[in-house]
Image (cartoon, rainbow, N blue to C red; front, side, top):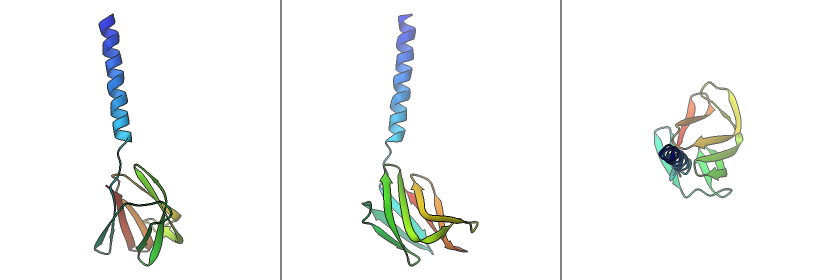
Length: 111
């Protein structure tokens, strides 16, 4: 009986460790590809970093270990041409697209 309890506790400990490890991933760079040009931004700071893509200025409004939220005064669109507002969330290890008008898109990822 004691061995079964020890095995169960060890299993719970392993699951907790794995969950914490995956949650604590931290990005190093914001990479942006736009019209064949690649730009890498490091050391992003909230409210002070301005990114210029397609003559549109972006500001970092929020930053966590695995996500950055960018905002602009200009409307943004998804690939289908639907307006998505002026804030855009970029998540760790996810390839995302933001468009400024039809066929004028930038590709963003956190690595």
